[in-house]
Image (cartoon, rainbow, N blue to C red; front, side):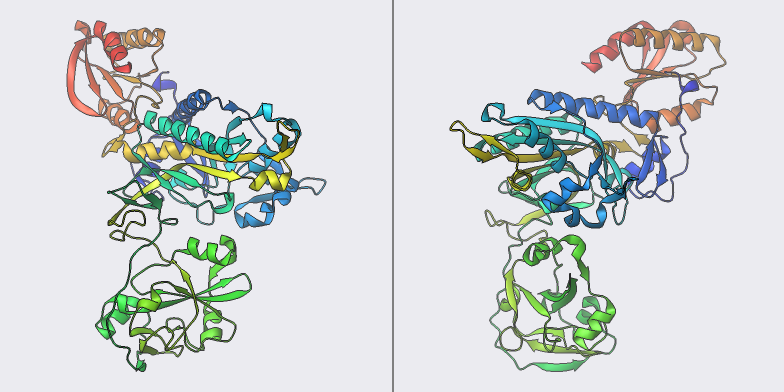
Length: 567
């Protein structure tokens, strides 16, 4: 392809809307354009990268005998109602009606659709195991689309579904998929960790996430350096203990005018945050819930959801009017003593270990000090409700844990019979007895992977594509397009490389050299050939986008050098 005919609308300035470097560079490199919040148009360079990632995915899926299908993105509501997820998925699902008033959704995932296919087609144990996948556009009406391709409302995903006759087979398929994913992300040159994940709306038992590491990733992972324990912050067990030998003191009310936050209270009482108990008020469906956690920690809402057995969209922080109704106080003074009757009080397992804590008094401008569990207040002690953080003890070996950030690019789930039972997907075993199929669900965020690669492979000038996914392997830049010898040599090299099957782009634009060089660095083609003033002597400059010295070589050596590097 010649740049003079190519649609690459690069930008010099960093778009104000873009926070992550991947979002900034995708916009600046002319690879994507925003159509609506969380919805993007992919321009030619981005499409080439997506296709390269997809091809890696296909090759690794084929290697484990997974077969490609393509399901409709338009899914009838009946299937989702059979499994109960029509309501469970909540407002993230795009729903619509056809002209006959039949309900449909735009598929956010396809467990129901694949299971429906199999229940009508698969009858015997001889047809198992089976692994099917697709690469398709998915739709989720994210509450807060952000970070460009990292969290959009429309995205490209590879979703695979495995069908097995027993748990042993399901686990075998699970670990085969695990190995394929490691190959995919290694081939994409990603630095990643595999961590325990939360199954969420997918259901099932075990799940793991593949996290591409990034200092500004939207996911925190907690891991142990002494053993193999690793989990997302939503899943990680928080293991630490509070020990106190203080005698129990008499509770006292303290006037704290307009002192509401933990930081303000810490300053007012001149004690550290771990002396306070936070009382957080939520509405869970029709119920109001008070959650008590140590003042220096954050609530893990995923753990709370699991305990309450409610869906994420049914849990909300209580509105100010609800807070006032159940505490008789303004926001900032809630505590466990004197709450309105019927409010459910859930207590993190560390709270009973605390002595003489400070709590809200359920009275505006007042707090209580020297509050103790059982002596002054009570409630349901429900176990671990807080977010794990660096320094907490590993639940597996007891050593201190570390925290890193990253972005989820893949996940694998052991679903068991969750969907086969709901949709009656069965097979006949060797004895002619009907058995439920055991399933797995496995996803790779293809468009997310594109963004994750940029997060790890860039510098101050632009993107640095790994060869495996680059839109082109070589960019030939004609430094001065007005010089016939440079144009002629550039075109000759372009045709030579193209004839050898090498992905090459020729910058033959009538632009200043500085513009061409800046664009070459911005779009990140891995191998660069500059045809300049030595063209008459058949000499060119050769360099790697990733750095290193610029070499002056004969134009006759370019093909061999490129082929050697591509090996």
